[in-house]
Figure 1 (cartoon, rainbow over the protein chains, first blue to last red):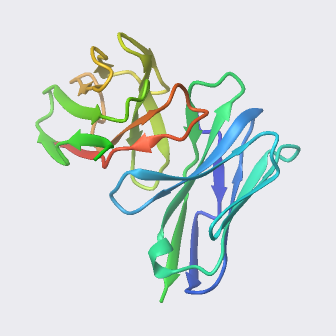
Figure 2: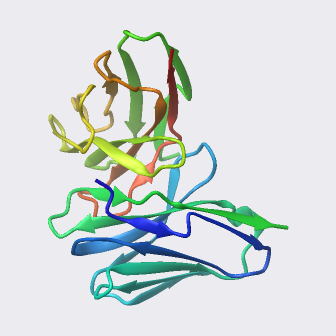
Figure 3: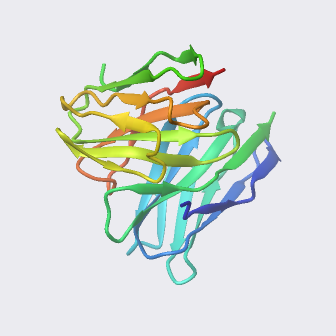
Length: 111
Length: 113
């Protein structure tokens, strides 16, 4: 069963613009993670935010978590063509031991 | 050079044949995972193992089998009982449990005709 659902399903922006992707989930979580997948490749971990954190930054990435709304957002600032990829959120439930992935947002950055 | 390797990158099989996908890691991670990804969809967990000689079913284990005889290796067998085996298969590993980030291999694209 997929817990995380990303929104939008696809996003197309110009280089230099900001990209925002959202993730909603259904049950209580220990942490939420964001991953990137280039076409036909494995996933790469971007950032992890724990349930007691509200915001986290890593380079051009900013992640927020609202546990009351069961939602998270990933902001990529000053996007580059190389950011073109699919982005997935993944949640670890309270009892741990496995991640549940959403269906992903396809981001296209046009140069 | 540490990481996870999966082989082969592309695999073609006839319907009715079992096929084994390889996954090896040299990150000294305890936990390993197998996921299936279908076009335009997220990852679905097939099996996972948190320790050698132990593994658990994920959400879609039917038609698949695994073994974990060594810490470094977690092969996945797609059996003839799997109704729709054509997919992209991803292996991952992590320290201890999924509270930590997962490291993914490059994937194996399996086509069954």
